[in-house]
Image (cartoon, rainbow, N blue to C red; front, top):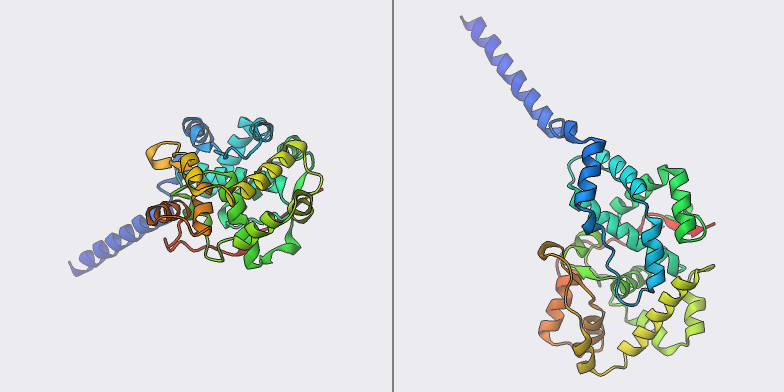
Length: 302
């Protein structure tokens, strides 16, 4: 009798261990991850891929990005990435797609091309696995292939992180989910030196310092729009900034807006307590999300 009880006890333990392994390894979820399902979910969640640039981004520049992003190619990337991240929702992956697309926009405009999120960097690596489609995308958007220079990985200077944040908040709408990807803004500085350099130098000097080489005409217009917006934002009347401050776009859980007007008021020392709180909500300032200064690949155009 004791032997039977022992055997039953061992069997129960083995079953429990098997169930634990089954759940902890994600085996329960993996059979549901298939290409057809991924494609259907990408279509259903396609609206959340919107880049949502600010008005500074030249319309032709943005249109060229949209035209270069072929759905069938995105479907391949999405399928491969979801099979690696089988426990991620399509919405979460689309949030990272959006970050990658915005990074490409920045890479087409500026000489410095750091990427500050390892998961978005991995998504970009998956994108590059489809060599033919990736090369076509680069030629359609950049007019030259963008590649990684692995030797330039490593710790970056704090001012590079600062400049990334300022360029990002000027050219794209920010949402409460932004710091969950890029980390809390302004941990390495508020970007005031970058802004001051632009304010006190002429356009050609700023182009020589920061603009990408072999830039396309529409991307150059975006650069010029940014330059003029910063010059104006540092000189405009505070009430004028407040009057022009736009409201948020998107659904309740995916709400984003242009925060550059709030940023100008803040670094000029003219923001109210409520305006500082609003800026913090969209930049994650004080949220505790870690803002890495690690560069996961520097990109060059060949």
